[in-house]
Length: 107
Image (cartoon, rainbow, N blue to C red; front, side):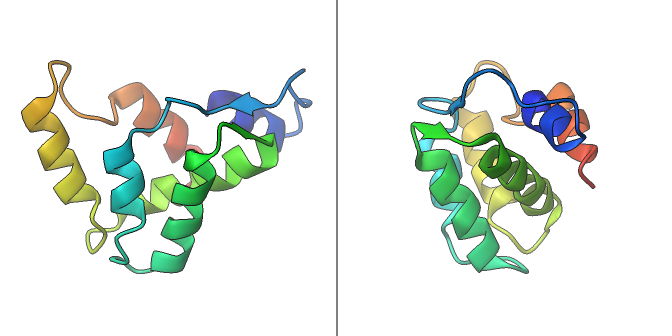
């Protein structure tokens, strides 16, 4: 995400495309596609980007902005996803503080 943020801020395009395979789990993608929240169509678009094996940095930046909104949207299914994730995780929350701070730069 930080590379997409830097790219969008004008610091140049990273040398290769973004490889997303395996970075965003199925549970998160399902939550994004649930149809819940203030802007379900936008959340579904984010999930579709995260399903790609390879994406452009523009797509990743767009998805990062949307993910930030999704996490903050109390009407979205993010809270449900996070609760289920924590039950099965040995590392705690899905979105750690570093990710939340990075995503917050788009807010």
